[in-house]
Image 1 (cartoon, rainbow, N blue to C red):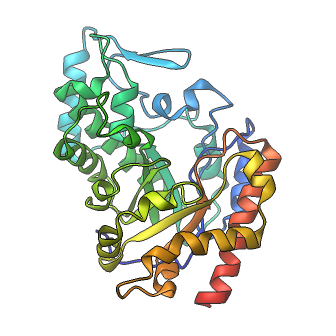
Image 2: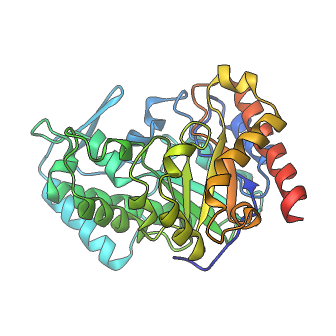
Length: 342
């Protein structure tokens, strides 16, 4: 784990925004999340900004057709895979960039050059990537041991490139692995061992020198990500607080070693968002945190080692609702910090 950092319930975002204009999306992020802005992914702008396509740019043999992505080995396929191994060993990530065509929000964010104490980035995790990209045999590449490992290494280089780019505007970075498909672990449809999942996650996490996070927006075996080297666990606290509460021992150990929890307490659907207010969300957050304030953990400690975020990405919202979600994140953070931190 990286050197201990307590966020004190500062706000940030998961990543995706509903906008097609990167300037508008960046403007909102910088307005409401000045302490830890997160560059906006814009999947409504182009299919290339859907995260499983966005971070596959440059992978050997990758072919995209609309919203689908698969591997077609060609003449340089084997040498391309070997090069990923060599570049990982050498730490050479320069050619693993994410271009403006695939991430307009990132490049707009970087071009604005606005300094902040910390900046957040995000990348698809190796489990979700491996279950989304299809190999030549028609199966997800995660079930091909070689491609699964190379994919994790490829994402490791992409994460390192992104982190290095973000350090142009802040010396302190935090990179999240987005792993929604962790919810499938343990099912008959995804027969993966715990050891393999952790090994692939750690392979990608090795590319991150600064703070490391992992986001999963559904129910999973939380003991698994909590046993990795991440510094931040990000989850949907609005609907899944009970599921994390089933792992009090693991959460306590995670906090004891300096970990932080990103409480995704701001809903990312418009119907729920319209029903909430600052104080209703404050009450809901308190209920989510309460089960962990036992066995020696104080409520203030849980607050101190926390972040406030939306429950997941904001792509499905209208731009106006997305702004409301960020505004509520900022207001709830201010309220919590004044009450328990400052």
